[in-house]
Amino acid sequence: MINPDYKSGKSLHEQIEDEIKRLIINGHLKSDEQLPSVRELSISLTVNPNTVQRAYKQLEQDGFIYSIKGKGNFVSDRASDGSRRRSEELLGALSLAVKELSFLGEEKKKLYDIVDKAYADKEGSL
Image (cartoon, rainbow, N blue to C red; front, side, top):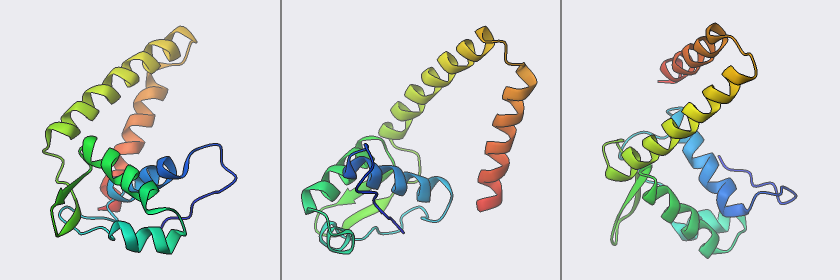
């Protein structure tokens, strides 16, 4: 599931966060599916529980997961305020990237093809 790279320049909590996001985005983790507890995941990855807790907290703020006190953490259904905020942030970053690619001379069709492929990959993983 998650294989942290201890030699990476990216922090462990960011690696855990990114990998869980990837699993959710690719449909490997479904809406309302329970994630491993902080303790379980920290033991399996041999990392400090605070590292996992930090990743889970950021995932919850971004709307990818939600927590139920005493029950655990679960995959969100994308309808939360956090996911809408994150969506707006990503759209802003995408807009900036498209403007820069346009300035660098990339063709519009190439960008459309990248977007089409991303959506096709997502649909194929469901």
